[in-house]
Length: 448
Image (cartoon, rainbow, N blue to C red):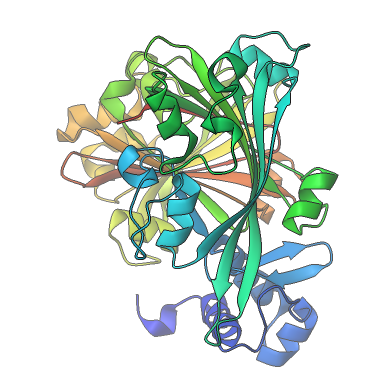
């Protein structure tokens, strides 16, 4: 795509980004209003809105009811669930020769910052949902809780350190395992609590994580420096032994403008994953399993309609995923999933390279492909999707989201971007699924 055809809002976004990088707008400061920026750059407020939306997606700024704020970090932290719990990662040796104290420690050091944690350790009565996950009563002091406010500490050229709160997390550990052990101390040692559990003979073999987006509680907002209208991810993490016993539940709360969540998965390994429960969003693994079984991608009681199937200009992220130039033709199938009471709950666009419209012409029809688009593509082209990756973000609803999902324009929506690839790395499909509030996404994977 030539520079002259590049969307104007991207050029404006580049100028605002450059001003932030030059220090014109300091980390954590408030940008001028949309109207003031429109006057400054000599463009419409619509273009400014589009530019700020792009910068919001990139984690450069965050939009609140009080205005647009510059992020405290240079870029979003990518939380890669596929590697962060492996022993190699959580015990990684830093430049100073010291092993990491767990996944978060390694994550932040890997970004050139210093991890810092305010920790409270106590013996507690577990919350009802945690007790249920751990399989213990909810009315007795039966767990060790490790409540943490976690910071990424930036150091400037003069050695001045700035701690930025990036996460609130509480871990719950069964008392019959944790009472009287290193799990009740402030420093759990190299590799963190997962490594200590392994030393006690209760090694975690698998993990499930449920991802949702919501408003922060009052205490979370205070700890993380958020306003009440900003959003956080809640990641409920459960670690289980090979025998299936849950030995850890951790509830992670992460500001959406500071984090991107990443999950990768082997599609064929998920052939026995159950269809997602009604009201929940299908993760990549669950979607893969459901499609392999029945060609369906939605939960019990839900139904979907293909509302369009056509050649359309590829947005930047689609073009990058499919190896096209931005604005070039791509094949787009748009699907709306409805609840049992006929309310739209998600809008999912599946994007393909345009030549697949000739080799797999049913992709350009709005009728449902009963065997599933992946099986159809494999039969028509010989291309088999074997690897998937989900990236989860939250952004503000666009005018199209408002129309498709009946949500207020500008309200937060969760965005799942799914890459489906062959074994040699060729992208077959790039999916963008947008869902409104209350649609959680679940993942499960083995630890190695």
